[in-house]
Image (cartoon, rainbow, N blue to C red; front, side, top):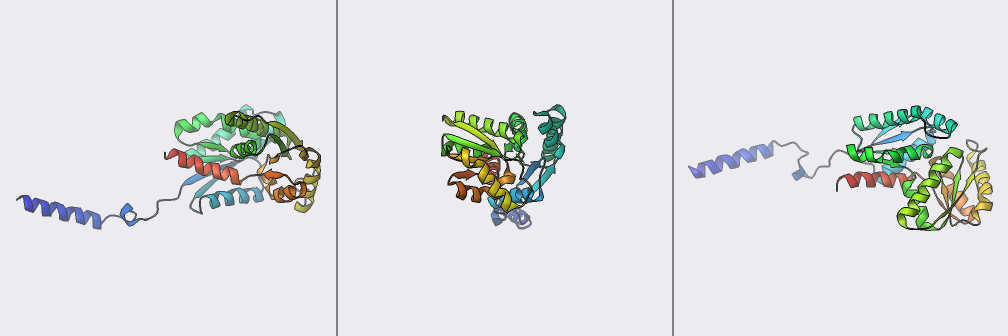
Length: 255
């Protein structure tokens, strides 16, 4: 009787195994790719392409990207000089939509609203959908690279949040930093070659006393190589640091 029960149980288990779906771990099939969200405020097609390409490269192409965009968030914040109720509500709405849609983590691209994204870290930890500021890891790298850090931006509203991120990184890493700034307006959106030359010239004087240059906006990244060569200074630019931090945030959830 016992032997009969053994055989019956064995063949029942074998039948279940044989009928199991092909994604069963025994077959070594890949799991579904992770889903992440990118939140933009004001963004050009080139910026979106660059950010999302960096994310795909970081994830070896195995990632689903959700995209959210609301230019009014940037426009109101830049106009008021701070994050207001309406812009905060709109930004939170995009984050909520991303969480509702199954995003495992959210990358905030706009440096102007970096303080708002940072303020949402506790919320992200509470609900299990971390929000990553695109410049946070870049600012840590800047602090590791030298004491005198020059922040370059094309929009004045991007400077303050980036400087604060650098100062926080300095405190976090236990390193003293000196932060200066240059706002290179007037040429953004013009011919790429002309703009990178204009940017290098505007930074030349301040760069002499800097150990490293930080581009506050990911949209400036195409100019990084030219400026670095022209000024002989290391230039840090996104989106690569943000993409790396986004992947780390997802990995951190699994620990």
